[in-house]
Amino acid sequence: MEIELSRRTLLRGVASAGLVVGAGLYAATPALAVPAPSIASCSTWGARPAKSTPQLLDHKPTVLIVHQTEGPNSTDHSKAHAYSMARSIQNHHMDSNRWIDSGQQFTISRGGHVLEGRHRSLSALKGGKQHVLGAHVGGHNDTHIGIENEGTYHTVTPPDQLWASLVTMCAYICQQYGIKVSNIKGHRDYNDTDCPGNKLYSMLPKLRQEVAQKLG
Image: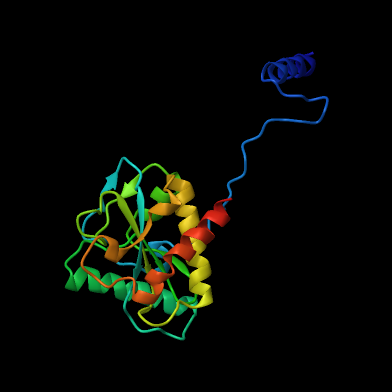
């Protein structure tokens, strides 16, 4: 009796929801266009503890900033190298720049490995409702989220692995936060710098186009 009542209750609920069960149709939440990519957390790549807890803002970022690290264009595309590179960036930002942590929210190695930069950025991105205050674009850190790309791109293009990860990561960030594809910008659009390099900067229209295609 309990099973039969439960079935009746279920069928009434389905009918009231406007679902056509007999035809094999049902309402479902659409799958996300861009599944979450693999992102190594700060603990995974061996980050130092932040000097103080990065601030979590109760709003979404509205602009995505593309950076270059201006480091060597390494031919080592291993995960171990990517982790070492992330630690080097954090050390420089904390010890030389006197910041509390890595300035950018995310980092991509030349081998295409994606890493969390500043602590709390990965969990905030997955939640899609909060923004970790960074230190990567002067005067705009409360609304701009940043990706550092390993290497220097004034005259050369990023390797294919990095580019593919950059497209996917930008698409995922835009999806999670509702950032307009037109708001994928270069660091030089906001500050007096040549970042992200002349060549990579010239590729931003292509980046926007490929991100839009991935988002469908």
